[in-house]
Length: 104
Length: 104
DNA sequence: ATAACTCATAACCACCGAGTTATAGGTAAG
DNA sequence: CTTACCTATAACTCGGTGGTTATGAGTTAT
Image (cartoon, rainbow over all chains, first blue to last red; front, side, top):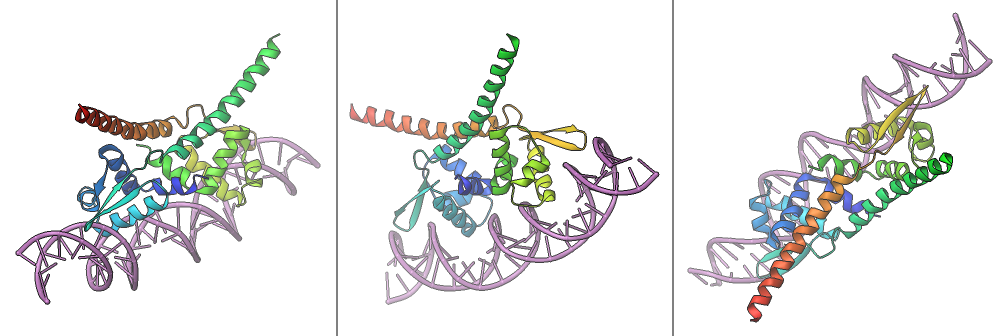
């Protein structure tokens, strides 16, 4: 399910762009490019991938585009993480129960 | 920081192996290979990457190796997610405060 | 109307990594 | 001791993708 999410966040440059948007809020492509360390087309491409994954929204304003992180963008990731750790804990609880029963 | 974590979990086959270990607990390489859909060397390679990222542990037993997910393997991922959503919320709170002050 | 600016797309290149087959190392079984 | 089994490593191929430069589309400014 969160396949595209992991793939999208796997690239360091792209994740750095996303993190900056999380920290500082809405940014133009130019502002993001200034601190990205790569060319403007590369930034635009990354933003396209982020948008495709639902991690970013774009807002047109004149000749510049503003990007921002929509609310709840990372909810699927948080859900997946909790689900996986939940499996671990349930197995652990099962083991605890077993040990408890063996103790009696 | 969680660079290797994201890169490791980005591949679907590798993530499927990890998920299976989360759900069903410790597994041998053979058991994992049976349901992986790829060859045994591929599975061994994925397990090596997962181990490098601290997402699995290996236990030698005779001529077969058992892999499992250590406790807290996904904590860095959960931390990163919470940090990012935290940035979002704090910015939102700041906006709320601003609107509240403007309302007076 | 023309020029300058912002961003997206096109076309291309180079590299990384996931997959394969073949094989080696080590352990149990005959 | 030899054979069969389980896993890891080596060597290689190939597709995906992140980077670049060049350019186009749309918008503001002169």
